[in-house]
Amino acid sequence: MNIIAGLLPATGGAVHFEGAGRPGAPLTATVFQEFALFPWRTVRGNVEFGLEELGLPAADRAERARRYLDLTELHGFEDKFPHQLSGGMRQRVGIARALAVDPAVLLMDEPFSALDAQTRTLMMEELLGIWERTRKSIAYVTHNIQEAVFMADRVIVLSRRPGRVMDVVRSGLTRPRVEAQFAEPAFVATSEHIWSLIRSQARVGPAGGAG
Amino acid sequence: MAVARGHRAPPRRLPRAPRAPAVRALALVGLVVLWELFTRLGWVPALFLPSPLGVLAELGDMARSGQLFVHVAASLERLLAGFAIGAAAGVAVGVLVGFFSLAEALGQPLIAATFPIPKIALLPLLILWLGIGEMSKVTVIALGVFFPMAINTATGVREADPLLLRAAVAFGAKRWSVIRKVIVPSALPMVFAGLKLGAGTALLLLVAAEMIGADSGIGFLVLQAGNLMETTKLMVGIVILSLLGVLSHWGLTRLERAVIPWRRT
Image 1 (cartoon, helix red, strand yellow):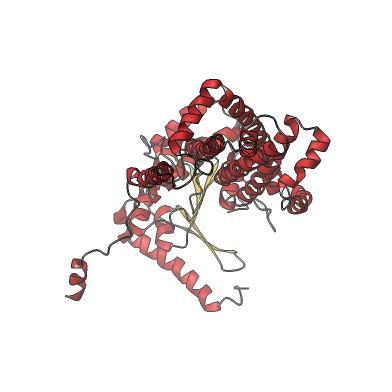
Image 2 (cartoon, helix red, strand yellow; image 1 turned 45 degrees about the vertical axis):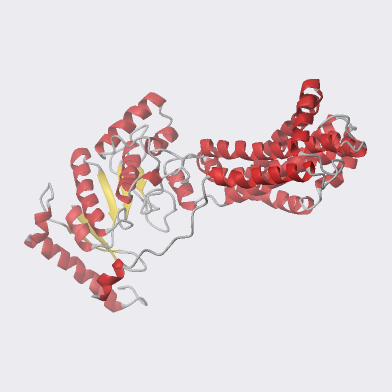
């Protein structure tokens, strides 16, 4: 994740983005697992942070912030501080902040793992809805197989240390996703396939990767 | 069921919250009333301890003659100038030392070596350098405020949440932006703690400096009144000093709440 975001240099290989970078928009924007909202900024201030760094004039910032706060259903909470919000709402601010800079790829590193189980499920559906409305490419890291298969078009299974690509699995589910799809044979088959990959890893043990 | 019964048990008493401010004020009022009573009954000679009403009357007289304002204005000028200079320099140095490793390597040993010097001991030297006028007094106050400010600010800067720094960088913030938008607000609570410490030190040094070499100011007033055995006047000076202390703390607390609205109260 950090390598894609350009925060760490790659030890090998390179990161390519399909399509030329558009001027005035970054390649990536990150939604952090621990939210990482600025406590001294209001909801609107947090969403405008990336826009300030892009050098947008105030009027454009306000306009864009409003658009993405509406998209994440945070309308009416613009002037609240992060500590006044619930965990799920905080992460919606995190998503709005990342979407507002209009990145080529949205990076989400276990974005809902700090939330309780119910909120997590609701937020997953929320994110699917946001995806339907924006069609933004999202790279999403999770340790939850069901979550991965339910949310993704393609699931990239990484091995344990060293993290190498073991397989790229198509989820095979139709969009828009609905909860009933958890029962579909395609869902079950894909989940079991991924689980078997991961289980084979566990059996090799932490000492060695699959050569 | 045992579990269900457990819920029925009366909730354990929490320690009582502090009583209403009115009740707390009663302690203060009670002390003043007792003090007045003692002096009225002549148990303590007025030369040693004048009565509160006497002090109040003297305060009125000094205010009418304009004498009071001369001293208060002289003291306030020194206090505010010294405090502002010391606080500004302390915050600037604190940010540098907290953020840049070179500044830390240079500044840390210097601060550690000079911080423990009682600042009032430097006053004779400062008078030698800057003369007996306002400059030496303002400087000694500024020095007293500088150290707690610099040390607190540097600590606050270093305690900035690395996750927030990472987030800022991920959203394209450059160094100056990171300092302004993440590090400075992170350090603000510590800065205010430093300001409150500094305000106390400033008052102490003000009085000391005015006692050593001044012909105006509250410190001068207190010393001169003591020398002339004008105990009532002396008490007026003390009352004004304690008022200054209380007011500066109250003002800084109000300012802190206004500047740091995101902190839970």
